[in-house]
Amino acid sequence: MKFYSNRAPKKGYSWETPPEKIAETEIVETLTAEVIMIGGGISGLAAGARCRYRGLDTIIIDKNKTMQALAGQIAAVNSRVMAEKGIEIDKKMLAADWLKMSGSRVQEDLLWLFINRSAEGFHWMLDLAGDCLEVGVYEAYKGPMFSEYPGTHHIFQKRDSKKYKHWGGGFLACEIFEKAFLEMGGTLHRSTYAVYLEKDEAGRVTGCIAMCEDGKYRRYVGTKAVVLATGDCSDDPEMMEAFCPIGTRPGQQVKRKGNTGDGQKMAYWAGAALDNPEWAPTIHALAYSGYQGFFLHVNRLGKRFMNEDTWMQAKSVRCLMQPGGDFAYSVWDSKYLDEMADRFSELGGQGMMPLSVVGDSFNRERMEAVMQKYIDDGNAFVADTLEELAEKMEVPVENLLKTVKRYNELVAMGDDVDFGKRTRLLTSIEKGPFYACKWGPSLLDVFGGAQVDTNLNVIGADAKNIPGLYAVGNAAGGMYAVDYPLLLNGNSYGRALAYAMQLADVLAE
Ligand SMILES: Cc1cc2nc3c(=O)[nH]c(=O)nc-3n(C[C@H](O)[C@H](O)[C@H](O)COP(=O)(O)OP(=O)(O)OC[C@H]3O[C@@H](n4cnc5c(N)ncnc54)[C@H](O)[C@@H]3O)c2cc1C
Image: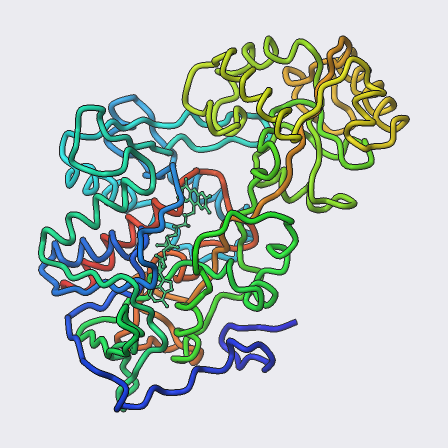
């Protein structure tokens, strides 16, 4: 067991060794600003724009040539959009549920920073965009065992607006901040890769050395702050092994280019305390078809293994725990479209994945078309008999028959005494054609980083703040632990917006 918090790590991983210092003769230029923001994803762009808005001279550098913005949902706790719709989140309950889901291993003050400032950040984004946006609030999943909080927003550019290149989601959010940042006179250098941080003799972090687009090294100096906004480490196998072993298990990953934990590494080399493992992975059931629904779930042995009335992250993790846990199946019969339609409005949120139908009213034709695509892609099977279906699924025929028989008994009893699923979601499997939809876990991100205080100032392994060094977004630790809480979808973008407001206040004041 390795610990990476306030104690010296055991040696072994290549990332534990800092890179060689670049010779002064190779550093062609020094660029100075009050704030050097390393990373231009949502956190870096939002925080950079807000710093600039507060009058701080800011340079953002990003190692990628183009913007990386994988997201559709943005959480904001009690936004004005929610108020207009009469929706309100009980903040104290949200905090309590978050703590439970995180095994109480999070910094409560950072959690409250997100809860209390996400709406403010979201409003500022809407104000920057002006009247060219349409904003929706996502219908939350509601169940007796698990409910989502209803503060997930979707943003879209109005059809007739030409203000932004992107039509919606994370790309649009990032573009709003990037455009504002540049219009306010900020400097953005893409294809610029921060290699390591520099400190002065007093231990203050003064800047970084970066490899620039022309292949030359430059020194970036931040007279007030150097901010890590470099995202997560899911694309670095050694960091994953050290901090998030379970995240190495899904057979599939939705990769973002270059999220190799550079900020965590740079912070570590500069003496920062990192979050204790296990870092919280986002493992969503997006592999194969990506659809699970509330129907019977069976593993690769054809056996039922869970209460299907739960969230997508929980499904992924439970699937991973199964023998050969790379995938499982949802099984239903010929009446599935009626059954879905009948429950659509009461389930909401993730209960109605695939993502393509979230937020809409139930669309029968579209769902049929989605199913046909799954079948065409080999991610779903249809058969006239259960025996034939089991063969197509490559699960033991007798097991599937036994499982379906038992499931139908539970449906008839109206009481799921085996796994506790709510009665309303028990639907029989009787009349062909029968369907099996293959789904499985896929790694998206890993949440763990440099420990910070509520000023977002990085804390050292000696428990003292590291002067000059700050972290936001996934490079910052403290707010997540154990498992990614899908209690309020879009919370990563929401956190980015909250931290942007906070960081700019701290640095401007
Ligand atoms: C498929 C998918 C869907 C998702 N959907 C949602 C959603 O709907 N809502 C939500 O809230 N979250 C979602 N997420 C998670 C979300 O995308 C991330 O948590 C979020 O982008 C983190 O923001 P960030 O700014 O901290 O990091 P990132 O967005 O990862 O940005 C980090 C930036 O730092 C740059 N960088 C890294 N290292 C260096 C270096 N050494 N020098 C210079 N630059 C560097 C990178 O190039 C990158 O641009 C999703 C993730 C995936 C994979």
